[in-house]
Length: 370
Length: 234
Image (cartoon, rainbow over the protein chains, first blue to last red):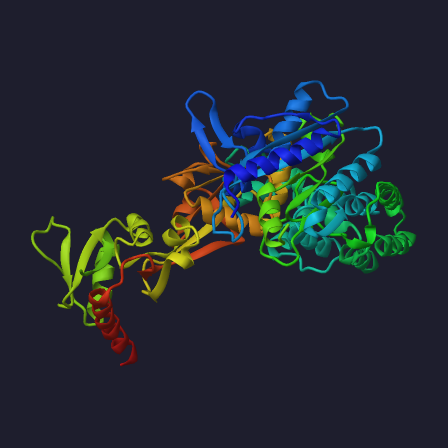
């Protein structure tokens, strides 16, 4: 195992490399206000990060990653075009021991804020990471969450259905359950069927007060609104099975980028909503080629990052030690416009970036006799 | 050294535990005065009875300060991270049954399943500007359950007692708590989600994997479990 000193030196070496591309070095605090992270990630983050309390500042968190504090810093500075690099320790709580993962480890990364040419920024990040990690012979994978969001936004169905699906893009199980429900493939729960039946002849207020005392912060008007949503939903025709199959086909894609592009073009013939996203992918791949990336050595997985990279809403990537499948990715990253949108209160600040684990780089380098 | 058996120190749980061992020919007796927390088990040499609050038994098992312990499966799963690697279930004892469930106000006629709860939470957050609050003392179990179900836009608020009252008191919108008959929930105008059963708990005899197991403890353990097994076979 490399020593902490060696890892720090390796992080500094990689950071110098990022600095060489004009990135400004930044150093966010280790102690971060918990509020923003809890608001973004919800209760789940408590299982993955160390939360501690300060008598004056309230709940604080040991930084679980750099992206959020770097975005906050960028937003506070007024936004605009910028690129940053950082290096330091992050802290991850574990509910069960995860082999190959430490509770405390180094990350070194780079983030580009640039609205001008998204494809170019994505290609540059990926090319730099590929070059930095080239000696390790890692397996590279990429995906694009923007494909799935484009399909959902283009669905010919109600806004309520579209936004419910959008909300669960990063929760594949619930996304699947929603699709099945909208396609009429799952049984309507008895209680809902009974409620909908009563709603045909009775006022919703009556059904609510029949059920019990009205208590709590959630008002009857909110209950009625959802009753009406369920009523409208039940009256809506189901999504076609063909459409659901096409979404499955899309999510199943696991090919070289060139082959994936062909498959996506085929699917887009029936799903024109996909056209723009496919074009974006094409431009990105083109930009990567001109940066000298050998795309035949990269695997394109359409569902890549859906379970692990919430708020990453476009291009996503990761580098893995193929020989050691139990290890976490050596590097990962992607486009996270959805994250900046939340942190900048709706302002659009397109951003793409990624991080490397210098500790793993050294470990694998030693294994490979570099 | 001796094998330490931790059992609940008071109330029905203690009585039922004593009964359970007694029915299996292992009479548990408290020694000394009524107030002294010590006792013997079935006259087996090398077994010490340790009387503890049921809530502390998981911690003592995890630390290996007791070899065997009787407590609820809910407490073990909640309080011991990766519990399966720390303790082993020896016998479910058939009492102390309680279900950890999610309950919402009965007037929520639009919410019957976890799926509905998720949809209601999304709308609630938009309307009120904060996440839908679920009051509980079972943070780990509830969080894992809701994560597996893919529920978003909720947050857990800690409630160590009178949890069923939190909705009426406007400190939570829903609760996740232990119930055996559902009586208290009904009295507080709450209903259980039809798929909201998180864990079905009962009193269980656990073995610590962390305790020191030397010849003396192993011998006592074999005798004790031998007698429990012969009861099961007869």
